[in-house]
Length: 145
Image (cartoon, rainbow, N blue to C red):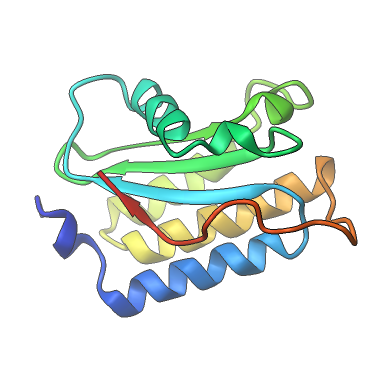
């Protein structure tokens, strides 16, 4: 599979967007998914670039998370903003990556993304619980490069 358009069906995309909404109900954190065909730099470096390009570093608590996927390159990365990194250990995202990687190895990309999103939401809830005055600061739609 080398086309971004073939990576997920429209129905699968809607399930992923719904998972983001569910995950964000329990946290003030913001989660986005970005998919592109390929990358020529390290996946985490590219995730950081996309994070900044999408202005995800403009959240009030600096608690945005991007799940980045390069389809043809078969790379993915999870990147959390400064507010998260100041509160968590270096291995904070390892269990989320592991869950996703197990699904991806079996070609189950939709479920890998959904499980990763829900796990990220659980982890964010610990450090950034939902507050009554929280608002959705970033789009839940999947972005593409």
